[in-house]
Image (tube, rainbow, N blue to C red):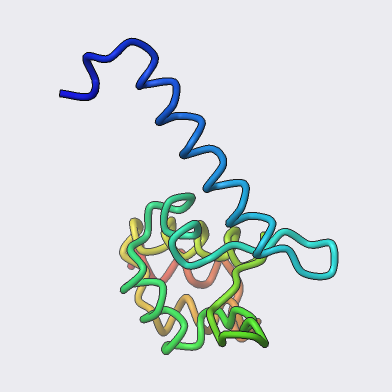
Length: 116
């Protein structure tokens, strides 16, 4: 019903942008823009539940906010999540992804295991 009022869409957009800017500023640490788990979920398309699972499987380890212990994701963490997503789409098992990230195997060896 409110959407029928002229300009309400603009007001909603501004309100959403202000909220996002506030959250971003609150997450900045040491000059590096850190992201919340919700932001990481929106950027990567990976559910927060799966992000936490990948953390438990030692595929990534985000920093924790000293004030509230919330997870904070760096751009490196976001990039790693995107890689994990790609490997999972290729049906690479979690253990193989972990060995690849830990440097115990090469990308070529990991992909050969998938083919054969």
